[in-house]
Amino acid sequence: MRCPSCGYPESKVVDSRSADEGASIRRRRECLECGHRFTTYERLAENPILVTKTDGSSEVFDRAKLMRGLLIACAKRPITPEKVDNLIASIETELRSTQRTEIKSKDLGDMVLARLANLDDVAYIRFASVYKDFQSIEEFSAALKEIG
Ligand SMILES: [Zn+2]
Image (tube, rainbow, N blue to C red; front, side, top):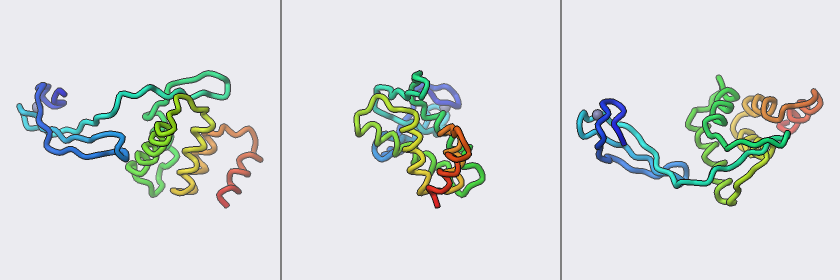
């Protein structure tokens, strides 16, 4: 792993710990040339999970994309990026544990919403309004009622 500061190819590991509920290992590394410290993550090489949309098209599950959507939903709410990260990790863990290689976008949205419901009502509604692509005010109201 090349040093992001000076480009030197060799570094030593100064700390290793389990991350994402054991799904990955986080390593702190120190560049042998300039002493710069940086973090790497080691994960199992996994088969991609396909997300199927309602129109029949599908795309590879994109953690960064989900993260962006969630950060928008959680804007100005008392939710740390770490909590959002944990939320996504828990979804990934569930997907892996059931050996799924494909999931409907609606089901994925429901998994996110189930977790957001426990986290923050406002973020839940924001995410629901975007993700479920509400067709009518009635549907939106129904979602509002769900959280009481
Ligand atoms: Zn360096």
